Length: 296
Length: 274
Ligand SMILES: Nc1ncnc2c1ncn2[C@@H]1O[C@H](COP(=O)(O)OP(=O)(O)O)[C@@H](O)[C@H]1O
Ligand SMILES: [Mg+2]
Image (cartoon, rainbow over all chains, first blue to last red):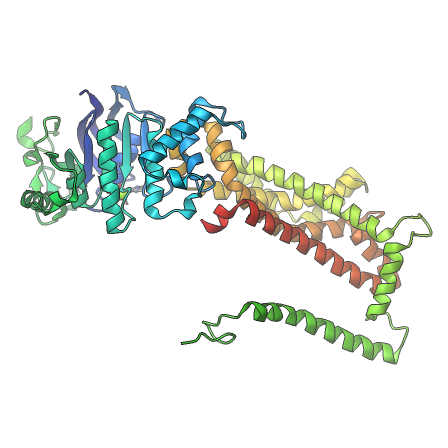
């Protein structure tokens, strides 16, 4: 499978505050890439950069070897909230992308049988065909997120971005949706970039797990004066054996959680940038001389 | 435990209690009026200040159901029609303008930079101060009155539209773009439909000031209209006409507001529930 997403030397600054600090990342097609990290480390910022909602202060982001543009059909997105249009029924929400791209969007009476059938197909995939004519406010949080997934999938985006999509759901619904998503990923051959702050979720879902964190050290000096931003401090290959929640009880799973907690979530445990655990074969890192003196 | 029905923070008045409570101030007002009207009329049967209900009914019958001797028109209905027409045209134009300008200004940052300072300035002009200007410019015909209503209500509605679009979750716009929407589609397919209930709410809030401007314009220059009549008969101290007219204007305003509320409930449930 080819490289779909390529991020090289990307920085993002808000005012003087560096949020993302020299990020390098390649993601292969078909990957289920999860990103985990403490709150405020820049996960959503990274996702917004890939989405094109914001531009990097420096560095390049490419999707399918073309520089990332403003948001378009090359990326799908599911947010934690606001993914659905509250004034449209479930079916209208799902079919909207088709109408916008292949139909006459300016015609309020436009209906296309094939588009509607396709929308129903995707609603069936997320098992919500019964709710087709309901409005989002009439659905539970879990159902809303399933609609949001169907709404994104109908566009067959090369990469599906998700920002804590299950963050607002109760644990049972959340577990259900995780399984749903895995099933969809497998059957539809999706490439997913999934941001969460929940280590269990990230380990359970991903084929590849990135830890983004501001807790690390390098040769730019100690303390806050260095104005360090979030970096990918670990990049794990995850083997996918079972698509059931039972793996979470597994001891190797528990070990991995412990390891990630240390790598990314422990402000006391500062790993040097040169020693990051970047196991994944697609992983690469270009440190500046200031970050790692011996490198140059 | 039973919740208290009337007193306290946790009171839950029942349906009939609420209706009774709502009616109570009205009934009191009528009773107080009747009492003082009776007292004054007992002292002086020709007193004009607080006419009895019978006197008001007679005056209204004359205006509503007997053709005027001078023109042969039914004055009350003529006045009503003239005023409603002015309000309807003025408010419709203002609403339409608010929708078009507000949405585009709110959505496109360039247009916002262009229009917002000017609009903020315009909104500060007291519309009534412009009334003489309008009368000089447009004469005493319909245009001046409609223009006053428009100028008095349009800036605030437009600003409300523009600002609420700018407070709109950015995610929805990005989402629409990922679904293949063009910029125009975002504005007219995504934002506009979601702004409609908001516009209706802004319109509801403008009805009161629209009547204010209308009455003021009619008082100064008109040949017919509810405001014109009130200020005309003022010379004869005809409270028996003025009071029913004021009640009628109030009722019309209330019905317009109520109609829009029904429209919101009928067409925009998602807005009220979401
Ligand atoms: N538009 C913005 N302007 C200024 N600071 C921002 C903006 N967006 C995010 N930040 C800051 O960037 C940091 C990372 O934010 P975010 O990417 O949302 O973190 P995460 O999603 O990992 O919790 C936070 O400290 C936040 O305050
Ligand atoms: Mg976030």
